[in-house]
Length: 131
Image (cartoon, rainbow, N blue to C red; front, top):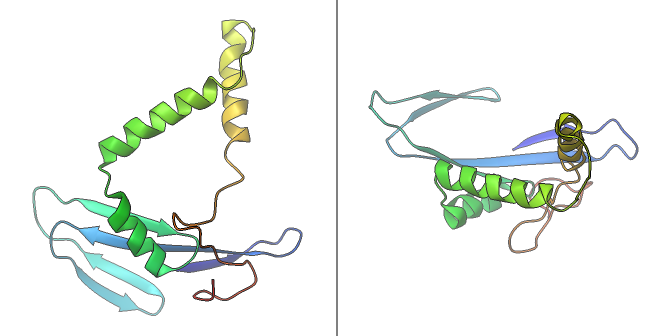
């Protein structure tokens, strides 16, 4: 997990945990806080990543539960984006539409849902593992 501190109001801490799954064996070596991966010499290597804002266990659960391919994720993201753009109808000239849609996109970057699929979440001021 990576823990970062927000220097804004309240000084909240942000946690990002991950779990990786490779389609072929990968040699790992940890030096200090860094993890080095030696990738196998194979023609195709699939890497799946599970993320969590709570802990590593939830990252592993998210990895196993979701199981999407990159193509599935891209297709789903395109559909969600199409639906989001349709949420607001703007009668504006085409040359301004790109600017409008870019601003709409930026407005949707945050806030983020920080809870897991089971509803658990980590309180900002509690250490990792104490959700």
